[in-house]
Length: 340
Image 1 (cartoon, rainbow, N blue to C red):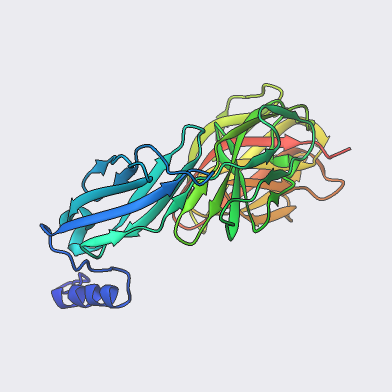
Image 2: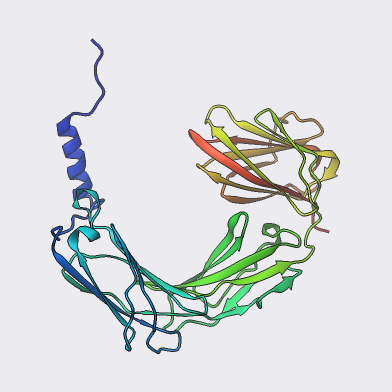
């Protein structure tokens, strides 16, 4: 008779006990019908009371209480709205938006029948680059310090098609410069900064900028992924929107073969992707076969910038992807010539 590998009821109970004991689950002391009152206060960037709605997302509903003349809000809930499965206390989301596009937010598990949240204050101090500026070089991002002073800031640069392409943490009021390889020629981007406090976050408004001609982009003649040919795509700025989902296997790499049409000097390979973690090896040569030694070996991130060794020249680039079982979706490929 084949032995069963299913866990016993006792083993399952022990597993849950361990999860609770280790703090993975925080059991709520509130009963389902117990009244819960939560309150808080929000100020504008200038320190005046915020007049507007507060968005509160619970386990069951979304509420939008109005602040009063002092910028305070009050919300009455029931215990079951503060809990998930197994009576686990969940974090309730509190956020508010200012007409200038800035936001404040915090998350809090409600464990008492009456709870006062830490106060929040808007901030919107972006400085440089200015809105809708066209950049011809590597940008740095600066802002005016928040009040009260924030322990740290996080700046993010976003491309509408790819998402966040670069983020940086700073304890001061500047971050950068952003490496040029992250940016495409003649393209639009947005950026914003988050002031990170121990109890809440204050996000600036979103600001736009454009790029001029930053790179010499090498046209890709064809792409082959896992043995399947893809039609050529090139508009003078980037190669993109492949949207292929690759099944990863640690023992059998998936090859992505890029044909440049002729032998050319190689500067940088840009690969935008998403999905499970993976490793890659990059080969380059005059044939689509992998050479004995990869020129680049890296663990891949969502937006990967890889620099070829100086003097690298090839017609074909072969990217071998491998990883634990899962998938990796390839969205964009760009090959840049060496910097002059």
